[in-house]
Amino acid sequence: MGAEISLTDGHAPMVINGRALRATDYTTPTPSAQVKTAVLFAGLQAEGTTILRESVRTRDHSELALRAFGAELERDLDSVTIRGGQKLTGIDATVPGDLSSAAFFLCATLLFPGSSLVFDQLSMNPTRATLLDVCTALGGRLSVLNLEEQHGELVGTVQMHAPEAGMRGTVISGGLSAQIIDELPVLAAIAPYTEQGIRIRDARELRVKESDRIALVAQNLRAMGAEVEEFEDGLDVPGGQTLHGAEIDSGGDHRIAMAFSVAALRAEGDTLIKGSESAAISFPEFFNLLNAVAIR
Image (cartoon, rainbow, N blue to C red):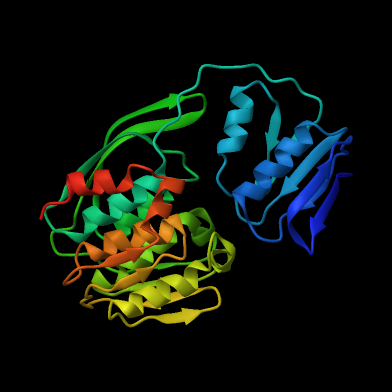
């Protein structure tokens, strides 16, 4: 697109010199909502029309937000198009509850038969709500108590009930993995407590998040006494297992710290999570809320 960027030995720190951008037709090698957002924002400032192509439709919050602020975008099955030079107009917006953060409490609910939690003002965006389908596949019962639209985003109040007979198992692969990529660590962390286990594939992007999440999930599950098989693009975690407390290495990754806090709720004995303060990166009040809803 014409940007002038200098790296340091191929990585940050980097220097970006301001200059005019030109439109591009770009295909993401790995489906990524973050990369899509970056290209669309750059395209808004570029000369010409930018096209972003993706093999799997990723989360569309940035597209909905751009429209809410007055931008015109065209969405096809596998591409998004934006014309450069458009002006945006400010709005009065409300940010709904994040499903990726709610995931830890949704999964915690599933762990204990008889448990039930209500989630108010939760984002029900179709490109995010796939997690609720996975929870249902595991045996959870979902009730939608309210649903409305705010600036193109669906927002609702939902109640999750734990399965009375315990969680079933499931397979997560293909486009499904891309849609719930951030929720996969906590799903893997509760997989030993399911009946049939959870298989995860096509999730190689987890290797290049804030940490290598596939490796850390496998390492920490084994530390808690679980059997787990690690693959380049996922994990096989058998069900019917009993975990014990252990020392968990979060790797400074907020999602690993929170995922194993949930797994520890049903483990025998105490669990120490190193680097638990990393949860504050995305969810500063996580441990206070977990402490408030957990019955001991």
